[in-house]
Length: 190
Image (cartoon, rainbow, N blue to C red; front, side, top):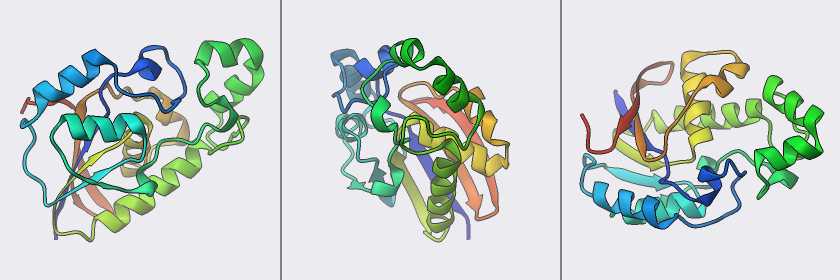
């Protein structure tokens, strides 16, 4: 059985624009407008899932999607760094940031490590492989990166080498243990 999964990264908001660890803020007006203009550009799906973050839920809504919020699709838990910009944390805790950026097991923020996120994404993908039909999921950029690292069996530090622009699609097709990827497709593009 072949599964087809399309991951949509959220539209722009203040946190993304300011390199801020997600603070639960809404989409900004330009992000919402861009998502609304892409509504209808997605292939139909047999099921739609959404990360619990505000920006993912608002992106799904702006795209005209009604989906089920799934906790396992949450972005990386940034613990006490949530709401701060990367520059703010770097000024206060440069060694902690460097450890976090180089060691996939590091959790200086008290949240979740990159390796734990990749494992969670891998478990979700394994379960999703059992669903026959097309799945569309609006998820945080770091969840997309975690899935790519997992699918490619790449080393943990590769997580930081992947760029997932706002409001792009990453397509996976295949089955558990054998996936093909199509990365960074702008919505509306083929």
